[in-house]
Amino acid sequence: MPAPTIRPVAQGDLAGWSVLWDGYNRIYDRRLEAAVIDTTWQRFFDPREPLHALVAEGEDGLLGLVHYLFHRSTTMLGPICYLENLFIAEAARRQGIARGLIEAVNDAARAVGADRVYWQVHETNHAAMRLYDQLAWRSGFLVYRQNI
Image (cartoon, rainbow, N blue to C red; front, top):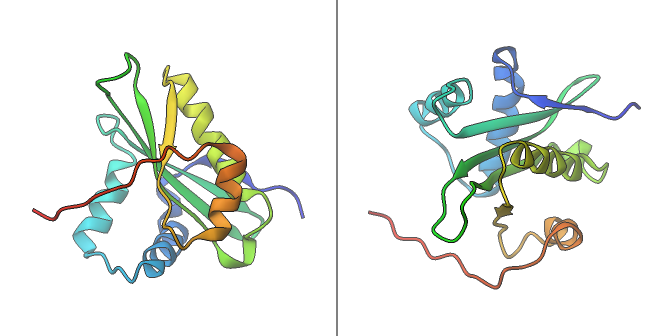
């Protein structure tokens, strides 16, 4: 099987992306409103938006996705890249696709002069952490959330 192609998401990918995006959200027992899904999809194609998406495409369709965005920081001059979501279809896991998508985000970040890429992982996702420990370091920071 040839290696999947990693590329920016395209308008024609909506059906395949939706399956992957739903799979990602099911992990967290989260069901998004249609308006959130539609707006997110449109943001990928709006050049004024900082939100981007890449997909990994195999012979039979989309195998994985990654969403990322650039933002400013008070501690660096250049932009910082936040890798917000990463998901690989269950049948395509452990084939290097997640690593390839992270490397593609790193390339995109370098292209805009970003000095850092960072992401979060749920504390129970040990499989992902094994990969992430090979690619990055744990910052030691915990994430706190507050709904407002």
